[in-house]
Each structure stands twice: as C-alpha cells, then as structure tokens.
Length: 221
Image (cartoon, rainbow, N blue to C red):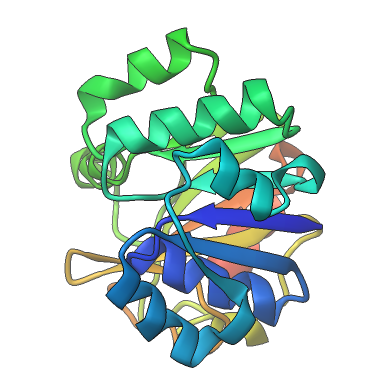
C-alpha cells in the first residue's frame, strides 16, 4: 500500500514513522523548506519538499498510484484543498483529513470528504464520558459502522499495564490507535508502554469488541 501524507507536523511525522515501521510505502510532503530538511535528515527519501495544495506537487509525489492520502497539515483550508484534489482530481480511493476546528467538519462532509479526524472533538468526547474507571466503552464508529472506536481505561489490575503496545495480543483487525496520558494525545506506537491511568483508543470490528474488553480488563464484559 502506498500512502501520501501532507504535513510534517507531529501527526504527519509520527504517522510516517509508524507506517514505515509496519512495512508501508509512505511519502511525507512538507511545504516548509527548513522543516522538510529536518525531517529528511531522519526519514531520508520518505520526505518531499513541496506544497501539497498544488497539483504539480501531488503529481510528482505519485498521487495517481496512491492508495491513501492523509491531509494532516496544521491548516484546515489546506487540508480541504488537498483532500479534494486527491479525491476528485487524482481519484485516490481513500482520503483522510485532519480537521483542527470542529466547526469545519460539516464543510468537509458537504464537499464529499467523509473520513475526518478532529483531535479537539476527539479529546473533548473522551473527557465528557462519565464512565467507571476501567470500563471499556464504544465512543463511535467509522467506515459506515464496520469499525468501532473504543475507549478503555488502563487500571493497575489490567493485564496490559506495564506492557508495550507491540506485546499485546489483540483480536483480529484490531488496532490500538492512540493513548491519552495526562491530557496529552499520543499515537499508539509499538514501543509505547501502557501505564495505569492511560486512556487507550482502539479500532476494532464490532464482533471483536467483547474480545478486546477481555484483553484490556482480563474479564468478560
């Protein structure tokens, strides 16, 4: 699978590293020359300098053969332009967009960009959940309901406490996507060790939700 990521901020940087570690072909596009050079020092040829809002740049990046384009710049307007170019001009099958301002999500939806990630709304929803400590709770669904978004608290008694994400035996097609620790959102990197008090956000098919609960809690729901 070939993935193009636009935006070399924290999200784009960590996502590029994670995808490469899992064997994906990935290219990160960054329009700030200094930042692009810094990223290239670490990531090498997986970094391209250019503005992904331009057709020429996306074409040079190989957007016509890309399986996925992720618009993850720090500007919602740029992310919308990139998403529309990828979807409508280059006919990329799957386009994901980061939306900084929750008020802009409806505009993305109206213009046909249906897979968005809003970290502000995401963290707010987690903070708003009034659940018992240690509970495993569905907080949403994506891919037309085929994938559940699950929130789970790590307790001192949890079987996963003290384990790295890469060590945990997860149900089929399940991903520990992110961890909220001390109010900070971190991508679910394989070497991240879970600690009591962490909130884990996982993606799993609905039929594996109970199995995931057993992994997190050690007991059936």
